[in-house]
Image (cartoon, rainbow, N blue to C red; front, side, top):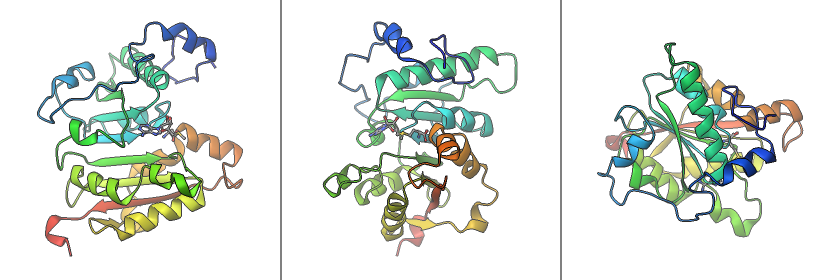
Length: 251
Ligand code: SAM
């Protein structure tokens, strides 16, 4: 663990780091999210990337950003956005990406294609991203919300799947879910199977997709499950990958 500055390895910060940074984080004490009022407004992009390209890959609930930075390296043609609701965690990921960018500014992979934003990704996605603009959507180890009365707070739901289908490129866009909670995995499969705009990809269709290994092994939660066994105590990681079908295939 480190008290800062953040290293490119993404060592977890200690509490002291948060206390030190709190005063200079503009969002730390402000609960109102900032989001564009129309999707045509692209002024926010300049805060995130040195180019003006829109994000094509979203890591929803990115936590400490392990997957976000791994995707940036593995998919240099794509533009990655980590989305995180906790201000201090978002600030940590921002500094982690800044450190990676400055460390690798002479190399080929300079992480200019990665950024992070603080937002509630259950609420504002269509304000940021146009229809059919997203290639990949990740939901890695989301909060399980075990109690029945809280199931409506799960990040995969019938209503939100319709929103995700709206954002994903028809016939190409992929939605990835991974969890160590078997019951939540069954929920993901049940909701996605029931949705008319998604088709589950078979193992042979995803065997060459590098993102599957990345979501299993590069997320901080995935590493934790490998080491400590996770909710199921066996180190089991349950995942599924779905494709957004073509509009012409809609039954
Ligand atoms: N995906 C990361 C990983 O696998 O290591 C983090 C998983 S962690 C269990 C879930 C993360 O999602 C937390 O960092 C939490 O703050 C964030 N989160 C929960 N609800 C969210 C929301 N509505 N929008 C954005 N982030 C959210």
